[in-house]
Length: 116
Image (cartoon, rainbow, N blue to C red):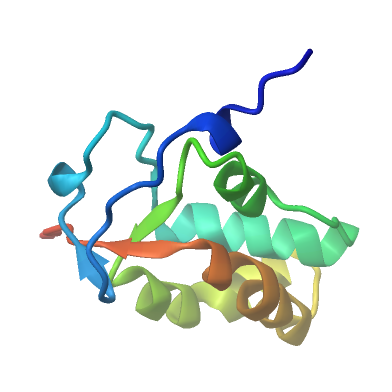
């Protein structure tokens, strides 16, 4: 018998809205916060290799770890997507399609203070 941990775990009590403080979670869980580079590499790699499930959505589908980004990440991704797509030798529109259809929907925005 296989135990589906995601199905047996109680639902997370996460405040609604575009961003939240991860310290309000009611239980311990892995909290991966991805930076723009991780998102860009994943999008371009998937676009180039035509992968069906990326690491981001695979992580999200476990129910044990929801991947997050800081609010500034989409802007950084937009800023660097053309250069990264060129580096991976993939069309920028293909990478953007992967972002829009697979990656962005799997991510949540975390209330994360970021300073340069």
